[in-house]
Image: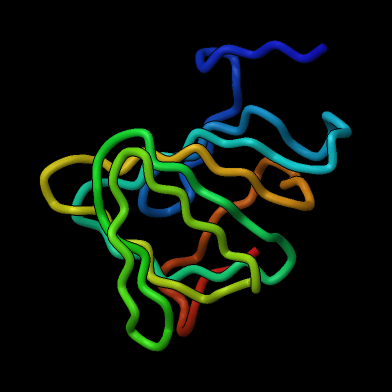
Amino acid sequence: MIVRRLAEVKTVDWGNGVSRRFLVQDDGLGYSVTDTVVRAGTKSFLEYTRHLESCYCISGSGEVVDTAGNSHRIEPGTLYALNEHDAHWLVADPDEDLRLVCVFSPALQGDERHSLDAAGSSHY
């Protein structure tokens, strides 16, 4: 059994926020669980080429926008899943941080970070 508390997990500054890595590849479960904070007022162009990701919003608000321009509102109680390695914009509203519980499959190694100043989407 694995039991972890927020104060015990690795925190990674992923570019426009922090990701607390509760479960990673070395845990042997085949998936990762993160508690991710997206800083208020930020916009990140992301794409996971090697991972599928599902995110459940627990606080804050914002939107996820696909490359065709379709916007989906994110607020507490909303889940979105990137089931086709979808490139997307993740936008946090300006008034407060957006907080998501995210599951990645296969698991993250645990030290991945985004390169948000590169041309195109940031991916790992």
